[in-house]
Image (cartoon, rainbow, N blue to C red; front, side):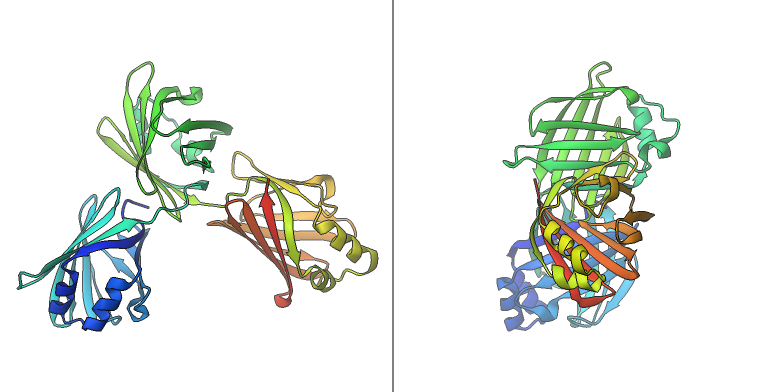
Length: 409
């Protein structure tokens, strides 16, 4: 993820109607475009390869999704037959050349803390028009899992830290950030190097950051510089060395640009599930048909139905990527289980025999498939703030679906 990533909403334009007319775009389409909510989304799928999505609320025929590679011409058929080629001009600017409707449009897209400014010019004419897209503020709070890095070892060395095995430090690293209710600061929990560290700060106010294992003892300050973009500056208490981080949050995760003594590095963290805390059901539908589909009868079925609304469970993230679940549920022997995304688990449930399953953590979503009582149960858990929606289906039959809405205490 880079500064180019994110979703951007058209906020203003200058000369756009005249520009569209010069391109040969019908007046009715131009009017609909100017009245629409126009959203532009960009995601770097791989280095130099971008997935793009454009939506126009009052002009759905203009909605489009594509994948373009920098420096390569791409032929498109919607909303008009066109050829387009993107190039990277510098660290925050794209240039594009588009052939459409018998005209050639050159554009310069400058990405900044506020969003992206686009300056368009029709070749062979004096017609220019501009658009300003504001970055849509993403969800700031969340749990983020290390994905990749570039140049971190060199930056650490510039900061005076010799790292023997960087991969061992970063492997299974993650952190959770929660913005305070009044938006004045953050609470952070780091899961690095086999240790869990919690700290908090207010924006624009100095705070201390200590990591003795890395010989870090810094004074820090964090400030917001744009929608979903934060700047953090650290100054070592002993050496006086200063280094900075620019954190760009998107719906997919966080990109951290690090700079020290002119040396730059990048870390990317993908968004996982913000699931830590104690959860209790608030609403359940479909319990009876779900229990029957599992083969429950008599006292077992009654116990299942009676206990569902009263059960609670607590989720704790462990250093190294594992997830510890503690519950008072009768279906969890010993009240504790530990799972890890992508790894099979086995559980023996009283009266139901051995259950095996595997779960996978995605962006704000946990999906899981289990084998129990000769049945296949699929679970999908979606997280939104302090709410979780759990959908459970037996053998792929929608009629067996149980939906549970839970709240976090």
